[in-house]
Length: 333
Image (tube, rainbow, N blue to C red; front, side, top):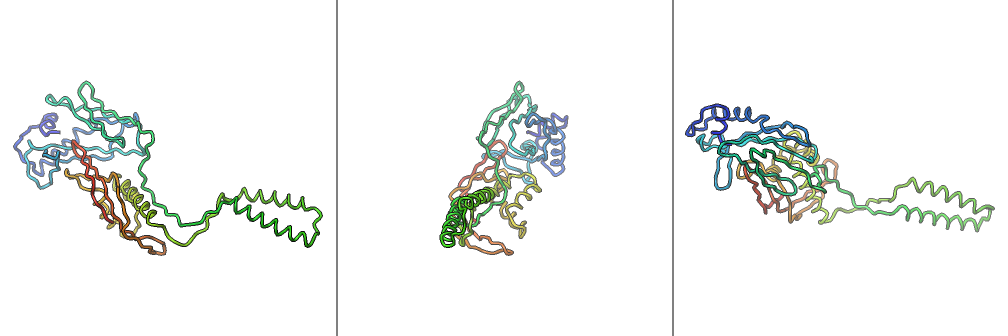
């Protein structure tokens, strides 16, 4: 919004040539927060929702859209724009979201809007006669990003229990029949084998469907690449968390306690790239991943891998008034 409109709505004086001082910044922040709090009620799945956090930043327009104004930058109030963002916490993708837009001016009575979901961007606009921004979930096969641990199965030989059990019964019959021919003492062989088969059947139904035998060796390069790609995607999902505490909880599933802070700081440059407007973007896709180096190591008694990989990624940032997308960035870790 323009400071001119905000100050008029709150019955304050406006001077376009007044510089944006530190004192004026704080005044505009307080005024914006007080005026907009509850101004555009948001309904998620038919329930009024309160934001978990708000953000107020100062912007200026240029050929790339809007750029964030730094704290020490000098600018007049008349050249300033105010950006306001609310964040809402959800457990899963909702079925519907609606926002009642009530901020219009005499000069601006049609406001462009952009709804972005996994299916794509949906531009529209609101007007005083139709002030509702509505989104409905039409995603039939949506799967939320997973930030859980990446499990690695040890190589093993799998033997169906039916085959193994049948082989053991066969050997048993061969051995007992040979013994019977020599001793010829058992007068009721049919009863004896019937009891054996009944007991064997009861035992068989209590056993698992297959037997796994661990084998020496390690995963191949293709499996390593799949592991690394899965890990990178789950790290990207973890970095989608807007709250620091929740982010650290999700990252703890993927990063060991040793050097946690140093590792997460370095990863932030990859998974939260800074956009041209000064906001944090996010990783949207990973392509052409290749493992250049891999080594089996032992850390605190646990088997682990040291891997060097390279890949290309698409980073996306939700800037003010536009979506910034940067494809083809190369990453190496």
